[in-house]
Image: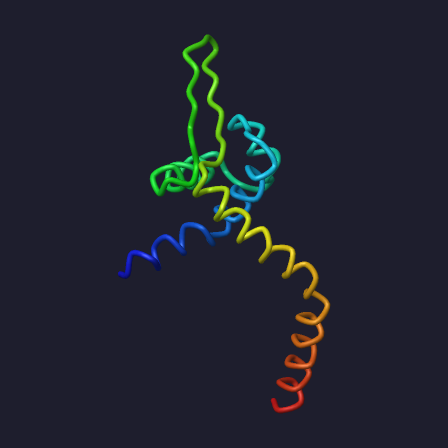
Length: 114
């Protein structure tokens, strides 16, 4: 697999996009980020954060305190990626009515053929 495809897959995955967009606003602790995103399991959030950290998009800051405190933030590379996917997200939100209209027309045409 081409390396750029793998990076693109990580950045544009369901949870990758939402994590990047959330961290564009500010840094989060794990539980805060999970609440902010909503609907993501602990396991999936952990896996996605690890993947994004490995790719250089997310910085994990573990503080040696009791109880343990871990903050997640974007690296410079992560900020650049987050801005790109955030723009795609805004574009998507603006175009939802057109997509819904196209879906309806498609579904009606398929029903008429069947």
